[in-house]
Length: 253
Length: 241
Image (cartoon, rainbow over all chains, first blue to last red; front, side, top):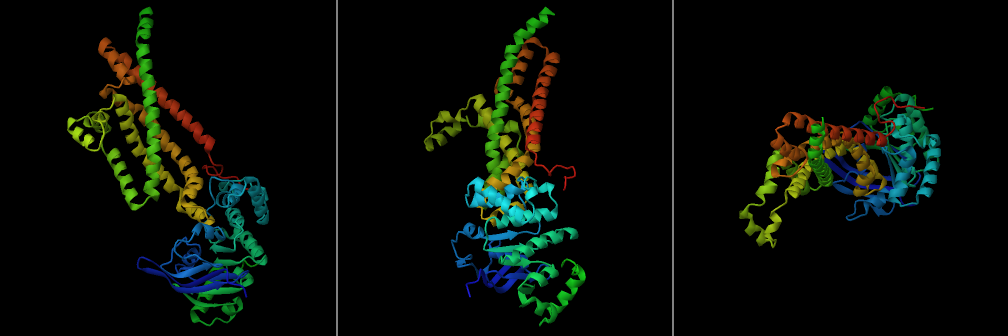
């Protein structure tokens, strides 16, 4: 058993009076797909952001591979470079074409020569099925296409783990499928993934483990079969019942 | 008719010189204002609390007081003999406090424009949105890299329309410098009027020259804006395939 790609130990984070994370511990093994579910405002996104220190935890420790993210004087840019992140609202660089968006990390962070970066970026765009949109600007793309470019942008850094923060929540229902399809491909290629989502179909089909979080703590975790069909906690059962009612399961194709 | 031609030949060298001074002052003050305004805006958005306070104080003072007082303060105020011991105390020759009218005009207009430009740039930087910065940092860019590669290219585009406004204002506001005897376009016109009492001709004519300058700026900035436009961000429905 190799060391986990992400290790989180007793993480606490508060915003003012609101304690968002109340001691969360979690490990993600290499090649594992872990899905985090739970009601909004329960600290799922904050937890994700603590992994690459976009949010700074008040206490607790985080490792990515063998490097401690929360150690003092750590070169956080170096760690972020190997942690891919995909946001709910895409955050593509609006002034750059799809191709330049994907080249951004390799060229500006890794100082890769432009020609090499261009080839790599085209490769990543092909991987998400958008090679023909290389010269389009974000404003010319649909939401689903934007999110696929954002995934390609993260992949171009050759990340050790991909963090997905509600990647389909801002999308029209008919565009969700294309993004989930790309994510499923990634899972099949054994990319290590930590995914916050309400897509229960995706969770059921792709994840190795589901974590149910509420009010800043992990209520229950386990393989999808256990959480969906034999939850140990009453709260888990209630939440899954409600979410299935709200979102349905139609996204699983 | 020949009298008019003769008159024109008499006044044009003066007006022409004045026009050159006005153009120099406008361009110089805009440039100084840009060089001060952009860092000030960055300090207000990204600076430490101390830097933020400093930048805000500067903007408040130069936006909150009349340009004329600023001009007088820099030209006459600094030349106050009471300041001589102060200059000597920090090892400067007292002569540095006595500015030429032109230098005082550049300083006052530049500092004043810098405060306004800082606000335009700050608005533009904030309009870019924190998501862009977050995405850049998540890729591993340093904050300076993110500002340089991601935030500024978008913010400067957004700042073009208000900045053109500032340029148009400034060209006209330079006309106050006649009051400290800078021989700008208006100053020269005023001298001609005081000799010939022809204000009914001179004022509309000089006003027309200012109008032409402003129209020129508007046209140039419109072209710049069009050239730098990001496809898909204009108001028309974006093309989708």
